[in-house]
Image (cartoon, rainbow, N blue to C red; front, side, top):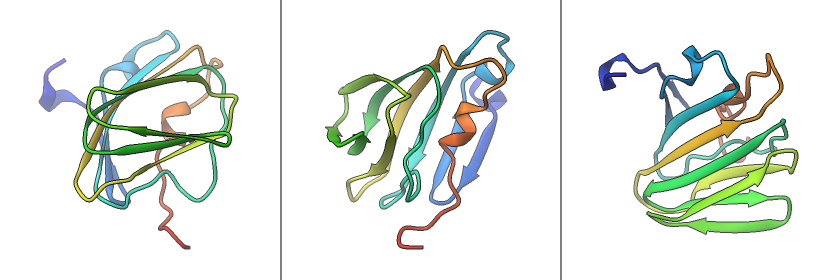
Length: 123
């Protein structure tokens, strides 16, 4: 897929870029998140089915999985079962990019859309 053909969905201080999973019949959803400083996944944790692989490309990305915090810097990765409550935020002062691959989720579940928020911190 050419870069200009990607599905791009801007949301509050972030851009979600599909990497073809939205057109793929099987249950895998790769995408790139671009997060401005202060961007986050929302006030509430997410829970869904399957697994999540996160690879920090640029910046500082903090993931909370249950009560454990992971500070990811460029080159760091995280993989976990997503029945565990989780959320993320850009923990730095610069733009953060992360490659995320969701897999093994339930058929028909729209897991990528769960990672898109319209909430502002503190609202």
